[in-house]
Length: 191
Length: 191
Image (cartoon, rainbow over all chains, first blue to last red; front, side, top):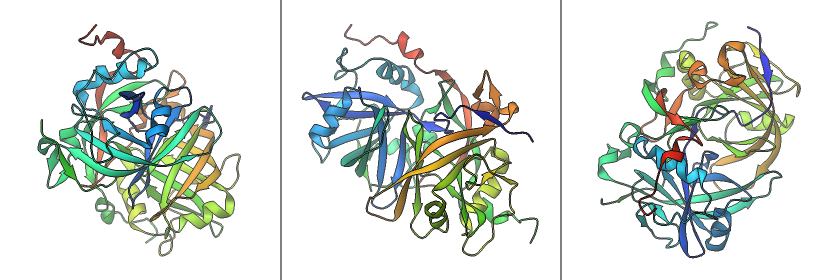
């Protein structure tokens, strides 16, 4: 087994494909973001990294709110379109049916099966291309048809997986096992 | 389309399944983490959120280094085992063939197709259960057999997708499209 080195880049597998929403100049704006991850279990918090040049950033700062919307396979084309076109040049406010939740200023997408409404907790000071926003997830919106046993069902949501580097979108595939469970069968060689 | 509310929890889809490595008390220790995401494109940085009680955290702080290892489908059982058993009770140093890179103190897993060697950049002060570590990715290790056109190939790596809530592991499925490309075909209704 010979390991080789690749140039250090953001090669995390898999990455999510999300649509981040913020009101900018009084209108909903949406941008496609794969640089998103959970950063705190309780209270639930996530991070979103946005290019400092992105149109969205000013809206997050102004309102101190934003949303993370999980698109499904069916809307992969418009999801990519949103990432290709900046709000500086294209008015994206009419692309989806927008709704608002308890925070009033975080626009969310009706057509996405899952919506995470976030209050900006802090902007983390790190050097580089992107600004790093940490948000507390204050509400989750979905529809009955995406839920099983009271929980979001990945097979009903059908989220879009992003592969960085070759830049492709992928479906979720077959079941591998139950977490915090299948490892109980594992026996280390030395025991 | 009627939206319903779910209790706010960390419902991001999909999440990665990673194995975070750190030297603790002079020995490699590994813990399974889904709370991991990219936080900066350039220089490449990622975040890892670990329960404040985790055995790993002290090692990251002591050495100021850690690794993020991407397991493949084949090792899903041991990946789950690692998450079920704390380094406080189980010596996990012999479960894998460990190697070290340029930082010298970030243990990495030979059996994982992709290894991200990280220098701790900062610990972000957020309230809650987990500590949030931000690391700069200083090196990427893989094998020729996981690479296509000079880039990691998700279909060769076969990473494990984690679904939070129902807690399951999933494979990567079929191809949906080329990112920053298929959206070029999309035409908004109003143009």
